[in-house]
Image 1 (cartoon, rainbow over the protein chains, first blue to last red):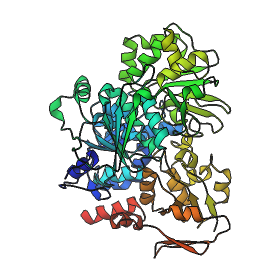
Image 2: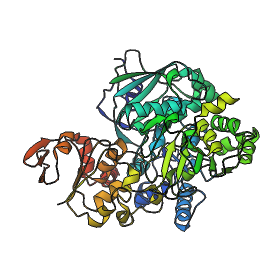
Image 3: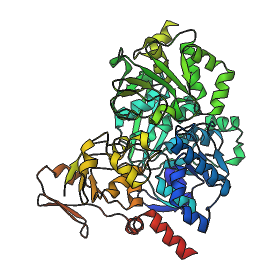
Image 4: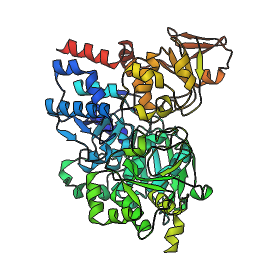
Length: 423
Length: 161
């Protein structure tokens, strides 16, 4: 029987010859991701851990990224508890503050490989489909149970095939593509489903695929998948993962999809998600001229080297508008170091950017870059929910790094193609 | 019994603001902030046995489980929605919170209607009209019926060791 990517991976992990959508399977994931929430997670099972121990010290990946460095005593105590847990149970994959954002690290450190299965107590765990892994988010309690048993149930999802055709226009990026798709199918358009990307995907680098996969959950998807090709293999090689270390799983020809959608991406212009929903997507030109007070370039959606290259190219020799605060948030220490070496940080800070430590920063509104009532932020992050950046009377708009960088210069929302064409 | 009704795409930031995610974990810490940015009257007035009705994609967004822990702790009998986001759906099973996916019931409900839940039959009766909702698969019901995933896991580990 021909199977989709999700069906093939779940059949493999359930040790079944074949599985069908709707079937419940029991699986043992390769890794379980946790971040600052590892503290409440391990506290739930303190006694059971004492009694039964950790299922496997190589299962958990723990990254301190959400509120770093600690902003108060309570956060600091949570971080301390996590460090003690890591030491006591000899957790193999631990990244203390400063390493970067959990999703970036999982991919960058080669902890998510093609054909593998990962679960994480964070909704953007779906990002690892960028390198051909099956990954999806779970809640804290489920993460706690996994630490003890190493296994859980998953329902085999139906799959949606998205075919991208054509080549992107200049000034248009992967972020515009994924926002456009979310605007088309809505925030619940892929609920419970596995999304596979096909077609002219060769033009997208591993970093761009990451941006697209990262936002799968914003259309309700369980996971997102990019077929493993020479782009994936080359990327993995660049981070030191030899081809012999993984066994890609690609969907069969003739697999059955619940929906097939074809997008001519050469038609897409720069787009923007307006408050307060990721699927409220408009052309940038429709909201051009709206004044902004804060800009954010970075996060697990758009905080990689290629994103900072785009921003630096636009901001080189320019100044951020005096009414705007431009925050820069590299997704990892490696990205930060690479950007330093290339002089991108020089350019961006010289233009007026404020550099934040690699982590989640302003994206979730817990600290750093919180907005005031009536303020408007233009961000490369993945959510513009009401209150998301710490204030429920502020507005968040989502766009590509190019749109945010150009808009930071003018102090208002601006079509990035203006700047591209001026050069 | 009161019924709280909200629209589509009620996300987890509306149910429990992200700014509290890393400082509030226990139900007592969560309760005062439940639905804070959606309906400030909810936390003050919600009572044991109340029902919550919502549109499509209830609980979308972050994987934080405080919304589920909070709704369970204040005694919400069930959330009836046109559809749920998947992480929220799993979290509800894991906390033993009843979710009813029944678009017809949500659309049929209007303010003065009396509502009755018949869990035995898997029916929700709204203004005298009955709507059936699908039962969960037995593997999953076992988790919810054990009182949630931690209780279920504890008993599984006990049997094994």
